[in-house]
Length: 589
Image 1 (cartoon, helix red, strand yellow):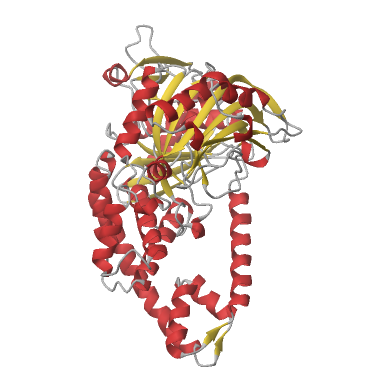
Image 2 (cartoon, rainbow, N blue to C red):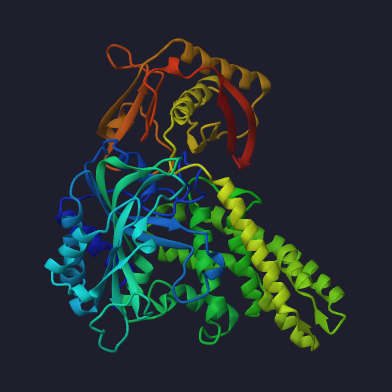
């Protein structure tokens, strides 16, 4: 048996012995990245450095990154799917490559975690028109003692990325663990469910552009990923992640509230545990996401409401989401943002649960209106799902009580059509590439620094800090803390101030300095953000003695070299997005 904290400590400590520097977990809400709603992998915060920018603390990094993936919410409910998860990763940014990465993986699995070599199976990339077959990785694994029959070559599953339509990508080598108590077969078959993926080494050596051309990156990188939840379950001899020490306190609380046992109620309890854990972390993020009908807020609302629906299936009548959130906050005490935002998390869950309970009552009235014949059509059942949040399982329970039936075939057709439309909409929403570093984006990124400083000056409030940012090649979106709506006169002065700085043709410099020194010299950072011990600081307009400037911020970039490159700054909109948080949208003409 191994606990979550033990696994994370062993991993971080091991890679520190291999000269890796630990970096903190980044926000779940990606900064300046319009291509994804959430941080879905450890690579998101590191994209500028994968593309060649120098990282302040070095070329070898290690971390545990909190992630949210929402592409398969409907799959949650089985033994292994999670919306929120922690991902362990070690990184080489233009330093070591396949040989060292594979050797480190093998050493950690067999020496530190004591995994028997006969329980390991390996996959390598079989090659395609864009990249050759990865015989090099296979030979390295064989040199470490993995037999050739334990290595399988795959095509689709062994080429990672890009995360969007463009960006860094490359072949990967996955490690599988034989979870059965029976002896492992001599030949590795990745299609056998007893083989479970435990780790993935990605060798990022290509960049895919908008024309779908693959070119070699300036530097070759290693990006690895080991899911904490799955690894803890596997090493504890469990086939069900939700029976591990990670989920046990959450499941126990659900059992207590519902007065039911996990056995025979696994699906509902898994969904509640997963969705409320994800919701707690999204609500607890410093970038202040609330349930809503758009973007991250829409996903958050969907997770909370799906958890509530399955609570009803378990027979829970009172409000319960905030009770479970309190357990999650306690269990994840190492994430201090959860304790800092404890009050906000509880208030938002209670409010959303009250709103949804009203909707459910309306849905029950609608059900009683349509449940008058011997059968409910698939379209009617889907209406209950889409408009009132009824899962098909809830509708099935209701019709059984009335001794009528549902046209499940028609319902499944309607549901599939809904999923296809949702996927198409998502692809349209995020059609640009991961971390777009076009000239237009660079300019708008630089303009956010000028906007931030202009707000502090015009509103005469030095406590104003960035609370979030989202940039596309077309516009910038900047969130900041301020208690009221800005007047038209204030907005006009902010716009004028930014354009005055642009027209002065001021140079922009970048330096790497220790974090505490950066703060002492007046550099701004995003509130609640976690930074490494050495950071990049961008300064706009240093004086000759370097004692004054227009803007000085901790940032990973990228930025233009001179404000004269920006053009004309124009404010489009100013609005409220949360209590005490304002949002400005602007463009460069």
